[in-house]
Image 1: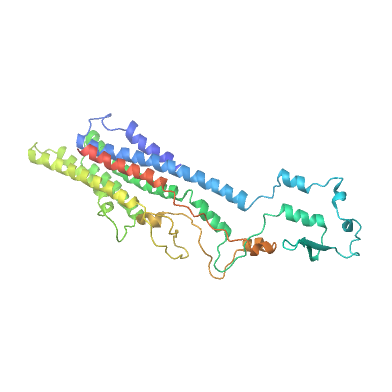
Image 2: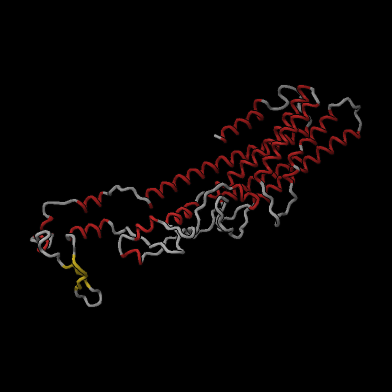
Length: 389
């Protein structure tokens, strides 16, 4: 839904309301600034929409896996039905003592197993149930059971979910970053679009300044909400505090261009100087976006209730660590807590004493989304270089 609305906003400014159709075209230096921003917005729009759809599809597949493989529905397979079906010759397979045993009167038969070392059968205890019941338990429920919970163990469904989350967390993260970068370029483009409409079609001066002020304020606010500048390791100046106000340079140049001043090389130099300053700011912002979106491994922070937390195995961009909005499974339970599901699985027999604790898959992070997103960022930088030179 969000992607569809964004496509409408983007295409309305590119196609139906494009500049130069309903009135005189703005100067070339301003059109280059506008078209680079609006095309970059479209590129990030397509990128984040695909990543969001891919992330949702993989998450739904992981949910189906958890519900049907770990918490399996009680639907018997044809093999299980064949093994549980009773036929007319089943009495021939029973033991003689089970056939002639009088319930509640005759003593229960002794059960025995074969000793692998001596080869002799050793009694293991009395059987309170018929032999067919024990055979059914051993055949139909041979995969049940689990490791008993301990102070250092993590619930199995936590570990399974963490392993499955490796399939989509990176797509989800860069889809959210792509939404921010789309709106950053779209707000810059719509500021330039509105300014050009006011100047070329309405022939007004001060409305252009006010409309640019509104969009620039919105641009500044969304960047400050999502971006948390890292304290160290940054290679670029904080252009997110400067780029929202770049359209004011363009509106100042257009004010001089559409003023009643006499044409003079000095005023022409001022206009081109303001235009070049705007191009440089947008190019530095493109480099800054690459720096902000670059993933980095960091030390794992302690889990705090009510605070965002992600495992150290995820190389997240530090500037967006607080805007990930992913529910990552914890690696340990809180003191005094236990997993009731694991206790019930371990209580089904002696098998739980020997079953190892299930852990999440030890795999390398799937960084294909970052490689795709990096290509979009490099393309943005290349477009600014092309339009300037």
